[in-house]
Image (cartoon, rainbow over all chains, first blue to last red; front, side):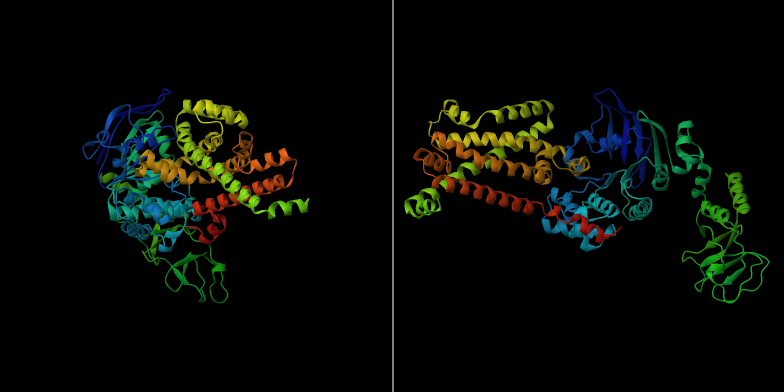
Length: 360
Length: 228
């Protein structure tokens, strides 16, 4: 558990970076600090491992005032993942990961063995250990950065905009990976980002900071979207927050209707309604519009591209989006393997949402 | 001319003298190079860290480097209490020049280190001295090596000036030839000075490559690795 108790940081030039910040990051959870630039989120993070010391107030890690510990020793017990990875360019990937174990006095062989283990944990091939950081892509470097932070198995992990320098597709992969790792390792993570979507996706709890380092709201993401504390938070979480909040609403009880299907590669009968084309494994491939005529076996050329897919058991957001993006008006529901289960309709998603609201 | 040169070099007494002067020259050039480098590192480190030290150190090094070498050779004995004809005068003077020349590259090299790498080094728990020796210094090698190459050439040429106070390695071949109006020692002196400068430079380049294996062929390999 990391506790900020009325922490203030004023820099010598008179700017107040953090203003009487009080919050608690629960053990084994991801706490996200989010806000525009100049809101003091990185400063707050760096006060935890004493890269910056507060002007006022106290920070506790498990009831221990961080200022009573030697900074270097404190830092070796706290994993830190920095923007752009911050790998040491002159050391191989393996030696980068082995840094902290070596600093705390492990033998070289043991440290390297542990580093090799960590590469596997973050999903990098062992052969990559012999490379230098400059020979890796941005996403790979970031994984090495995470491996380095985890090497000595610290209970606390600080992450400073770790994924901001990689492209959106890679970033999404890294976020998913972090959530998977966290579900296995259960670290106390404090994560800094300026991206509210990232905050909502990763955070168990989200602290929204505003300029001048004042805490605007500290709440689970669901509550942040449902009940923003003020105009600043509501404009910061964005315009489509009502829609995004559906990510946190389960879809139990949503009716799934049978759909008219046609098989790819076989002749299609004349139809007076939309029909979903499926392949041999039962996966949806696209929609065949009503009263289309198909000569010979059905090919993908005759199909209209489908909308997004709703994985059965997922959130209402997935279900609603599938329905809204489908040309037929039926959202396509699939199982975990991607095979067709049936169709969902937008009106029923909204009706389910209304019944949830009436219940609560 | 060629005839004179062959005659000069075939005399065993001259051969011994030239070899001796070459060794002296190497010592007089490289010992100060090493001392100057070792002095420039902590001075440059302090200058890079503290703004006041920086202004002082960079100013002083500029001034020092403008003092003519001959003048320095001549006044040093009265400052450090050596005899006029002491090798130490040349060693100290050249070490001072080397340090003056290298302080700025040290500061520049440290300035140029990427902030996120330094922040990461602090964050994983390096203390300042260990961080300097194991992270900052190795990363500064490319810029530093360029400075050391310049300083080595400068030293090898400046040693010759010491001949005017009687301690000058190969430079003594110049004074000897000049006094006797006899060219061969001068030619041999010039050739050996150039050769020495070239060999030392090649060794420094090789040493730099050895110290920076991480700098090789990065662009080519990156393409092979692909995206994450």
